[in-house]
Length: 225
Image: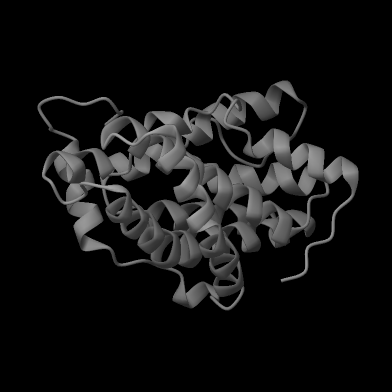
């Protein structure tokens, strides 16, 4: 994977993928809280397996291919195509909670983009995926797909490790070790995503879907549902 970037595009990517970006990604565990409560995930190696599998099977096969296609549609200024892709990614969210995770972050990013003067083709009254808007912002700031995908995947990974740090719990050193161990999975996910055409977009992670659905009614929660 070859990534090219200007200093400006790198700075914009850092802004877009920063944990300080006010989109609320830290508020969701994507089913991990239920998995930990039930003892499916107990230690650092379990977290690595849980997160790594999602990176390979979900992020690489849904989010990143959609990101790439949305960025292409943004270059062509094809609003109809962007709306179709937005519908597709939302249809891939298998539970109410996973859809809320995506659209709540999308709503927050839309407000931010509006304040920054970045136009979108979406109706504010409709559900908008964070992925779709991330693609539009990346295109607006002339960030190449590989670099945008790197920032998107890193942001997702960091939020998952932060959730595990609070829930398992993990120490800060273990969290940094995890981030280091899982970095290779990001590059692998980006490379895989470029081979996924639209007809093959989709993920099948039934246990994570069950955990997410059960988390919606979990008796006590740190994370949103």
